[in-house]
Length: 376
Image (spheres, rainbow, N blue to C red):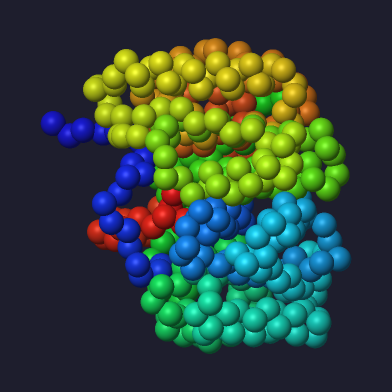
């Protein structure tokens, strides 16, 4: 009999040393958010361990003249942990198409790539994020051949994350992981007068990391704009220890205690379908009671319900109470729901954003171990 289960094991016996090349592309939402989620995990790893865990976040097409929701949170992390994160932004502030390319656009793209090449060659970083490099290559602002050649000869330990629409085939060819975000439309939210429900599902990597990135964006909004913009992160099927984002979230909570709360529930083991234990039901219900109360209270402007989908799919929670809670949510509360599922629950119909993450490549499918600070 084939056993199917969902859960995260944090007590891994060994971790990989060789860094991988990740590509997040597609028309759906969540690509840059996934990169931010990895940044959060990597910083968390560096806070509590002596390991070299420095991150470069290089943001193409996101010039400093424009404000992005994650800016303030990234700046807060830089102030608190300047030894763990560097950020470089290049490009102009507004969107442009292939017929509107200027000399400035080419110079800014080259400036960003020169920084990236230096960082890759230096060996100083454990993670280099090339945010929105895919459309830069698609627009012809940089040589795809040169970028691919450089990444293909990166230092062995280095993790590289490339994001954005329209990743070129040559980059996908050398990628160890390729997740494509695809959008789905649901009419139920508009019909019920509901907005602000985002769902990330599918077999590809990037669902929980996108949610963590979204939380980082929301924290940034609370820091810089609206001190009442509180964030709650509830995570199911992740009751153990060893999650590297915990340290970074705790650091943000220490600096901004009124802005972010974080709860985990579940056991530190796979939950097998048909072999659910009493503790699995108890922990799932405990998490839902926290989430339901938070949604109804209106105290939080952003609530992340991480791995709620598989919790429902494993029948640890009933669907209808979740639908009822979402139908009654305050208008200005955003809900982010993640996780894969075999059976689509009814609350998907209420989503204003539904991004399905397709797995085209994943190093884990080839026997490559997961890595603390990147995968969990």
